[in-house]
Image 1: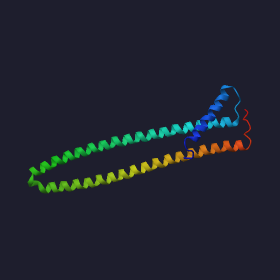
Image 2 (image 1 turned 90 degrees about the vertical axis):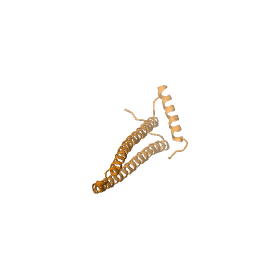
Image 3 (image 1 turned 60 degrees about the horizontal axis):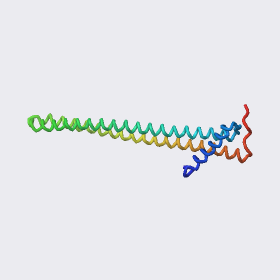
Image 4 (image 1 turned 120 degrees about the horizontal axis):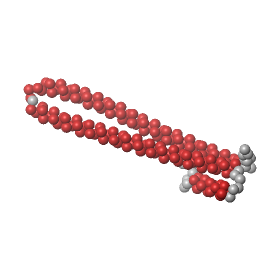
Length: 167
């Protein structure tokens, strides 16, 4: 983070209060005042974007949790089915060849399921990586933008102020 201990937020809030005081007193705003208001609007906008992104991630996690619970229930169903198969195998010794063939098919199905889970794991990791990169990109761009606006304000002050905007 560029600023520590909320230095930037405190400074910006103080500047906004100063500009609001000018507005309440019906004093004219100079370019610096207008830049301060724009900067505060951008900071608020980025905050809301951050909140929305975190909300989207929370919803995504809840959805993934629900999907995993469905998968767990399906596995429980498969487990119950396998228990029935085991009981049936104990009762039917004369059909061992057929049972062996069925077990081979089940093994192939489990291998397919394992491959699907591996694919799902890779997709989930890719999605998480993409979300991390997206959040980092948004965060980086946000701070670049805030830094650029701050630099503009500082340079304008160093240059003797901006000319008032007339319209």
